[in-house]
Image (tube, rainbow, N blue to C red):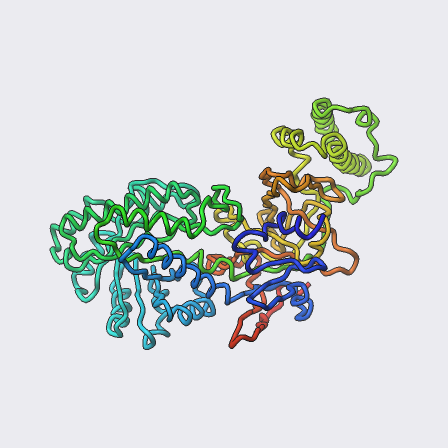
Length: 582
């Protein structure tokens, strides 16, 4: 198994990740920024780090540049007359270093902000007297919020305040300096964890009935409403669904202008642009079936065809901008097998009946019968320690032997392996983990979205990427909670590749041309005294904001990587306490 195979296996060969990640000739994970290369393993060793948030600030800037370039290209292609107004939604990540990077680099694009709460207004007050930008506020309104926004208005910031209810309109009646956005609910229903963000039952937005009530009470709405805001949700992975949103939004824009909203000039489609946590265009929540270019082209095409007056487009997708910039790196403290410590088959660990089996169907029947016997034996094993020890060893031996037997029978037969994955009994042995890798980490702190929405994050070892993985493992954190584990791994290798099994536990890790959702991560058993590290990619969106403090475990040491005046700058900021000092 070579470096190219591991690029595929760990999905760092995609269009986005291949721009900033690679593997060195000696199997180390490399971070690439322009012509600079950083060996992440050497970085952790040099600074004696057990765990770290590696923040790569140039990735934020490059993504911002890419968004602008894509929109400009599509605008030219369709002769689109509207302008682009990018805004960054602070809810995605309000870390100072992130917001500062976006504000400073955004000066060339007039990149503004999308705000939802009063504390978010306070976050950007430090820019109040600097270059003014656009602000779109779309949260529940209060007098305090409107007074806070008024400060920006007086400093010539372009402030648009959304109305989502009759109560909002009542408050805005007393603040006639603000332009208004009409937050309208979609009728089109969504998909995925955030599907409740669209449809008539969605949390925010106006129904047409409520909008008519506002019009009846406040005729100033016609003069002050300049923006249509329709938010479909987050991480929408199906381009076909997005096309429906584009059409519904364009119809709404036309209808509102025809009904007297003549000053409507901006359209904000909210978030929804999916970030490819796994780059393969599967059309799943972690692997959207489209790229940024296709998203923009379909949007602009619909607006060009359906709208006589091309609206200015407010781009509000923050996840796409910041997801890649943070990499979580954790050291493995200890590795434990799920079963007994038995790794190699001994003379006592033999099943003569299995030696005679030459057919996979016969093997399946044998496994089912053996598991029934072991369930009965389990009851007796609880009575004394000797019985318990023998039971544990027998289970461990059986698991090991079955995987070897499956490999012997069908390990080189692609179609037979695909059929085996549809067999509940065989699948359980093929793709389940054999080891736990205890890491100096907290799932609750570092990737809380695993617990909130079962989000997928790509795991990559920092070293030995020129070797075949040895086992399937689950990452177990330091918390006392059984939910503090991560074992999701998507395997997809091209049709020209080879069938892959892990070296030691003979688990299936890859079939050419077949997507497999493994229940463990292909990893290596650390050698004696080896410091083994793993990286969790694309953790820069929402994870900082949602981080919990379970068992009093907080963040990590920070490694800030930047390019300043063409020179690489690496700054390490250590925590005062050392909760991960193992």
